[in-house]
Length: 249
Image (tube, rainbow, N blue to C red):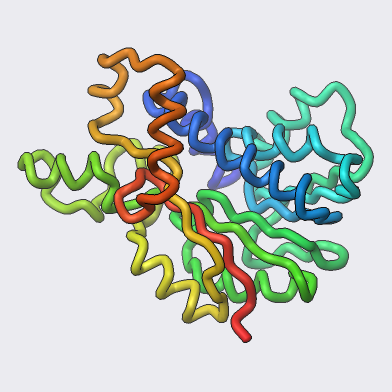
């Protein structure tokens, strides 16, 4: 088994955090799809598949508004196969590559690169971030998303005596293959040290309580949507952080 395939079960509906993660990934993918539709990017590179929500959104836009090339790279054969299995046919312009972010070699450059929920997984995030400069067109940008150590629910848990350290990994984190947490200052510092300038920062979800506590509240879709809208301007305490970056000049 590929060393990453051991985490594939955490990307199925049986995983306790699946629905919450799916909602965040789906919103992230929708935001990227809207950006591509309005910005006219012709080529996009995704690092990783994860819950397939981003891939679904972007594949649906292939062939529209000039978007003609979409490459996805992932080292997990199981996740690549899961995406292939749900596609009736592989659309023109879609390329699926099995490879490591640290060593894969795509053909050509891309107008947009997205590394959603990647940096918390890899051995050395700086290696990946520095490498992406090679694959970006001169006017392109990169999107990065990570879980936030200082999410409101983790801060509340810490002050309630339930979480000794907001930067510690839970069993769920380990099941997903997480190796670390970032907060907003640490993420911005890492990006800057790797030659990237931050263009925009957004929060992705306000999560006041634990996943189990949120589930007991049986929140309607309108409230989940509101928690995402409110989060956009509160990235420092959002459950996940999205950053758009360009090469520093």
